[in-house]
Image 1: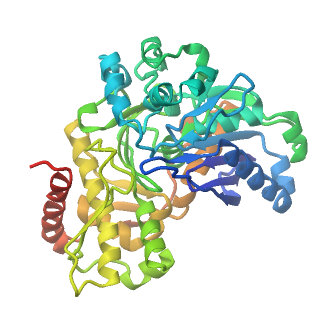
Image 2: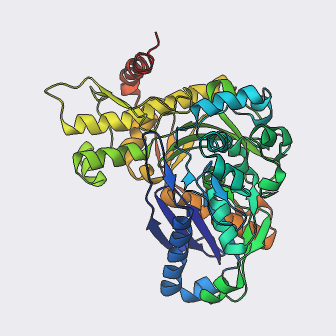
Image 3: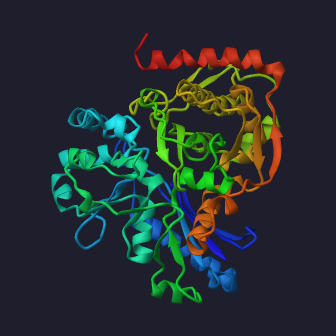
Length: 484
């Protein structure tokens, strides 16, 4: 048996997977994001730990024999968050999250301090990354910065609690701006530019490699036969890729989670920072990937649900299974700023085209289409980097909506594949990494593609209408950002 734990932004999800790669049981505990000021986004690191323990305790209650047989554990983590620990190993402040926009000025300062940043890290400095957050802390909370002994990403903090080991994997470390992504090692120059050294960093391993064992007290708490090995694991998107078997060059998927990702696997380091494309290490050795990232995807639907006072399912049901035409309303999904391709932490969302005739369904469809149009920007940014995507799987909570996938297929002009277990992809991928760490099997033997439940093709009758709608939509950002 293997355990996969996904430390997300909105919840911790844990799955039990057997030797035949069947999901035996799942548990989830919701998390809360704090927004103390506009553009700020934080979480209490100990909330991740409490939620993780709660999910495993629940599995102990429902599946004690299966949990006792767990041999390997993998972690999937929300990326980029800055967990600052003091000499006692305790957090000095709340974690600054991936969708926090406070450090835009520090991004400019960091690139001035280290001109080789883009060439070495494969990415431009953006507020979502970890390193600019540390520069912000250095400038605005110097007493906290001075007391910082160790900087961890979210899943590495949970690992520290579970194992006592400060270890990070290559995929998650790629999102810090401290990693030499081609060499798969910390960059001393990058660390020096933020006033840090390797002593402040966890030890690096590949995601499929062993990275500590569960502490004996936790193993006893869950009546495990022996303390399971914990894998190096992965950032959430790389874990999703492992769950989908997207470990071979050319594999592609679209993630409709809190944020949105358009991913493709590569056999080399292939950066394009000018268009805010992310070039990171994969969670398996000698493999990399490119991503276009939008900061708000399924979270846009959650926001609309909260504002309209209607459950998400109630908003989606009247739309049916597929669109008959684009909505007359346009929506910019920049509720937390945007990454690919704009790198604009200050921009915010927008509705355009509202009239007395506008109904709720028009607005909801516009929200879904706005996210799809943002993915079109990602597709084009990847194309500018020399990557053409022919088809893609869809994962994440938003993948449960057939209507949304149909919209995406029309906007992107791609066949998109629905998967039965798309919403647990990150946790399932983490369980696979736990298995690889425990057994030493080759990744290609374990990380096989899942069965596709359905393929949704673009509707050729709507191609021109959606192309025109995309053109209209793309006129909004320059006007909103004050550019011609």
